[in-house]
Each structure stands twice: as C-alpha cells, then as structure tokens.
Length: 177
Ligand SMILES: C[S@@+](CC[C@H](N)C(=O)[O-])C[C@H]1O[C@@H](n2cnc3c(N)ncnc32)[C@H](O)[C@@H]1O
Picture (cartoon, rainbow, N blue to C red):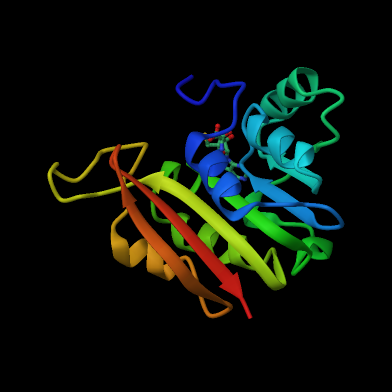
C-alpha cells in the first residue's frame, strides 16, 4: 500500500518541529490512522493520542507496530463517530483520508472531522492538491482543490494557513476559537 510507512508524514513532522508542538496534558486524534506512524509520533510528543481507522486490519497492524508508543488504536467509522469524541481533542490530524473518499461521502466526512476539535484546538490536514494540471482524477486519490480545503473548516473552525507545497500537496491548519 502507498501509505505503508513507519515514520511520521514529513509535512506533519516539519510542522510539529516548526511550531514546537508539545502535547503535554493535551489530547490528539489521528483520523484514518492507517498503520499508525502519525499517532505514535504524536504520542511521543506527549499527547494522549487516539488513532482510529475503519479497517480492523489497519488497527491491529498499528497496535503491533507501535506497541509501547502510548498511542491507543481503535476501530471507528468517521461517518459514525462516538458521541463522546465531539469537541474532545486539542489536536486533530487528518492525512490522506478525505482525499481518498469520493463525494459522497467526502463532504459528510469533512464535517464529521471538524466536530472532533475542542474549543481552542487545532486541526491539521494533509492532502494531495489539485493544481489544475491534470484532468479530473478517477481516483482514489482525488486531489483536492482550494475550495474543498477551505470547506473543511465548516462552521466551527477558521483557516489559519493553507500551504501549497510540492507533491503537489496541501498542508492546512485550522483553529477552533
Ligand atoms: C490513504 S489511507 C491513509 C492512511 C494514513 N492516514 C496515512 O497517511 O498513512 C486512508 C485511510 O482511511 C481509512 N478510512 C477510509 N474510510 C474511513 C472511515 N469511514 N472511517 C475511518 N477510516 C477510514 C482507510 O482504512 C485508510 O487506512
């Protein structure tokens, strides 16, 4: 699988270093965590971290690969999130999940992700970017345009930064007031 990796996504790691990210006393969640490297990384930064994925195979693999990381890996469906996760996380990280979904259910998934962010919390999204140079993707992945990245803020979050990076990729940071 293209997302079979044991190291944190480089744009997440770069952002964490640049912002001096410290998870002490804070909660993080990784959406569609796949094989768990990003959740394990956030746990090492001190966050009480949950990584969830709809795939029990991915969750089992993540737990086995990152046993001892401190991250908690659970099976959950982004489209049917536990009520107790609403507004529960100081940091929400989404890497390559939204752009893996057609629409529907992408719009519903984006709205669901934004509900996870606690007041004062941050969301970071990393996705392939539609730079207009290619015909529409038959996907997945479905590279995302700027309007989609802006829409990920929904009515709860504000866009802090929307970076167009090589790849082409997006790295987007959002904040809940
Ligand atoms: C392209 S992979 C990216 C995995 C990981 N975020 C990474 O970057 O390595 C997309 C992931 O989203 C998960 N996924 C797809 N639909 C989901 C849903 N409805 N709820 C939770 N996870 C989902 C898949 O099982 C898969 O692990």
